[in-house]
Image 1: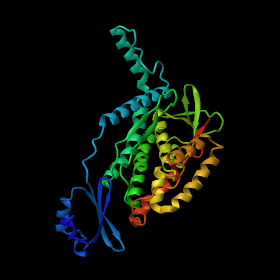
Image 2: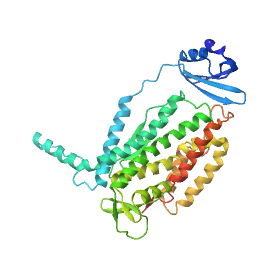
Image 3: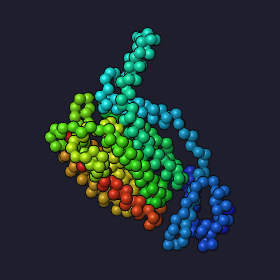
Image 4: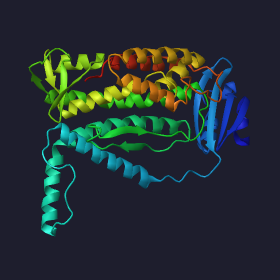
Length: 372
């Protein structure tokens, strides 16, 4: 710290696990910052960012005290590839692919193996656009979290993707997650990390949805459950509406009922995943954002929303499952865990980010996602 402390009025150094965090108020003559301070920051072996506060312009510096974690990239890549395959298989089912989803290879001659693999690829091929769309959305969401956490010097794992058998879950995946390896310093960091994933996934979802709606087909309505549906193994499944989905469909398709192309379904699922993650409960992204905005008041809003999910469960039982899941991952708590410096307010520049993210939750909220 000695090369930098001469630029500070006062500072505080905190050691958290494998990180050193320096929170400093910079001397007035160096707040621009000065060329001398710029040169010193270039030599700092970590990251830094600026904040404005009542006590003056603050500089936050973070560096690692241990060796970097040796990532098991083979595991993350392997999970991604297996998940891509199961999502591809699910997409083939949704696209009406005929044939076996897994190749039959046992007891075959070499030339028969090649023919079996060729038939398998032809069976899967119709599901490729669905797999590319949905995996692109999930990857964008997780990388939004990952790179924002890296920007703040927070220890974080690469994404873990979770495959699912398509015969049990027609989507072919249970989603993805990253793991924070070190505590978050303050509410600003928490808000930014929590909001980055949903926004990244949402923007990619919009592109995928627009392309998919252009490929979707108008159909005669069977009842008035919902203006959009998919066909899963010969059975119609109607999908619910959010404000974003309603606006996109009206703009790109018009009135009437539409049979969603698999690419449009990927976009719809991207909006749905965004909404689920933005529920302001515990350790979900929405819990991060609301705690970043309101601090401890997040707990009361979280319980209000949780009881709202119980009420919505009478329209769609899946909300009861999700309400139970949020309690499970929060170990019975819906309140967000405290950050290290919980009394430090977030800068005013972060309030629009937080409230726009709350608005994104409202715009993507789907009261009845599936009509079953």
